[in-house]
Image (cartoon, rainbow, N blue to C red):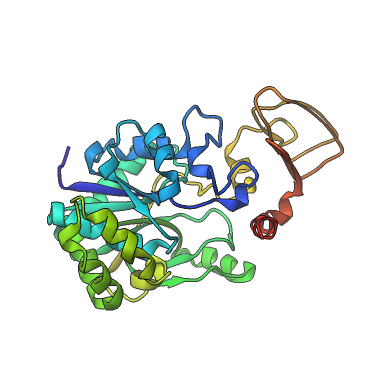
Length: 352
């Protein structure tokens, strides 16, 4: 294994669209959402460790999930778990992790990967990631793996590249915000748009230079702690200073400003598992398109539903179509799939 390869595994999200299974106390990345025998973070860690030394995989998460991470990933040492004392989106935590890695190994190349995505063809993923590592080892490049769109999705941002670019790795023209349906259809028709899956690859040199250029204030804040990184003083520095950083995504902070951005169209299948509907897509279905997790079901005149309960719970349904039915602890959710994006707001209102 190449000792210069590193990964930053992002595991701090709450996944509120998967409520009531995913909660702020126990978010979706720590659940076996597909009944596959492994939680999403375990599956992602295993996938990355095929190319990256286990000791070089850092997990970025909220401090309240520390014990869950260590329990689910027993091969990980405490010093590999980077704890965010405050929620500040993706840019600050990526900068923090990058400076730690740079101090340890200035020749490092790294991948930033969400912990809650589902990728079935792991060999294709490893081949794509190797291609990106090779490119970023030689070039001053900020790279992303773009996902081939399969339908006009309005829930993702898009990456546009030059149609005339015949290279396998393509220069990014621009990032596009989540579009409306008609715009998304035009993106698909154009053929030079990819979904932004939030998987990034770069050398530690390239990303730290980019932060210095585009986020000087944030960079100065985290550079102040450089002496303390990878030592016992690091924890107190982060606790005192982390919350002072701006709440901003890596896309806004760096990627949309930089000119040295490249994309590799991914050859693996991918699902961001962002909603109950996206989970329904990945699960096996019966002849009426119903997907079931753990439950024992008796269904009549019912189609295109997703049903998730505790193991072996008997669920009897008659006359429901396109619904989310989730029974978890003291909550029963019965909600139209067409309104699944509203679940996040529902949870926020309940928590007020």
